[in-house]
Length: 205
Image 1: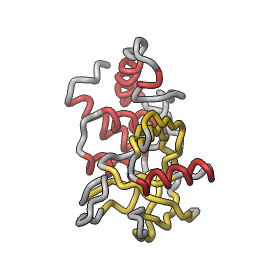
Image 2 (image 1 turned 90 degrees about the vertical axis):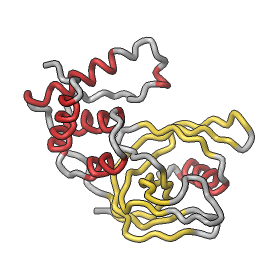
Image 3 (image 1 turned 45 degrees about the vertical axis):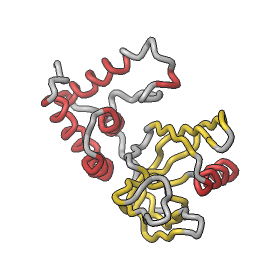
């Protein structure tokens, strides 16, 4: 698999491929990072924070899991001086091979890109998860599309896409979401989410 160099953004959230990630950027290290990503049309990496704070502190040192998801900047709005509203979209997953913290606090990494999920059609015994997600999406018709938690194109017949959207929507612990993210088999990921949905009475068919 390909190896790339990229900046990292440790966050208290897990980004999934095709997921939407709104951010408020005000730290200089990340304002510079976003500017570079826009200029070079390059992604940054979102990794799950396991120790420390998202905002830099003099005594704190971030620790994070060694895998995550590429994020591409889709839109930016500078409504207030020093504050940048950013909307990002999740792309491929990656594994961190090595990382170092620069003097300005920005983490840089050498990372290996992981293979994207293969398109796997949802089998009949898991279709209830797709039907439940379709009901959620149908309920958004009065909400502006820019505020939807799931953005098109919708792939309601694909195991990985449906599983990833439920990982984002359900209030699962971040460590569980991270585990789901790194599962290689999208059908197994959906099976696990289908069980969770069933336990919460969200499967009606």
